[in-house]
Image (cartoon, rainbow, N blue to C red; front, side):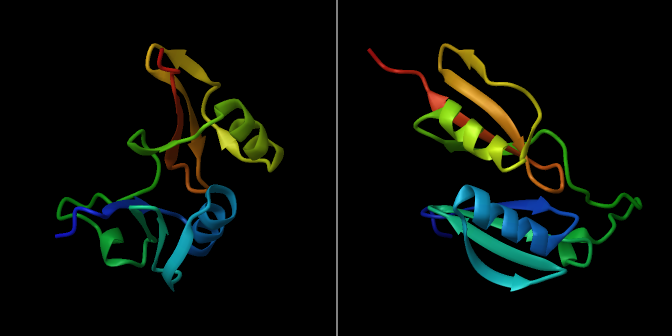
Length: 128
């Protein structure tokens, strides 16, 4: 197992729309594409697995529940200027769940992908 790569799986409603969204808006690069079932994209050490309902990850559980997009689990992308990044993405019509929230560690906002999965954008607080 490589410690240089982190894999995160997101269930998505439309694999191709998700690939386009992550590549266009957040600077990911496409690795492979077997839409409508599956695709993966990369940004740095993060490999994002985009799984549609036709993928093996989309199969029902033994109790009948089906994997679905959404929820509150997320990965975080660190940005240098959160306000500017939010303005850039809002101007493209992207959806946020909240406004920028600031705390002692920095500022964050929750961005939604086309399937309702969350990406946290985070700007660390300035260090003295």
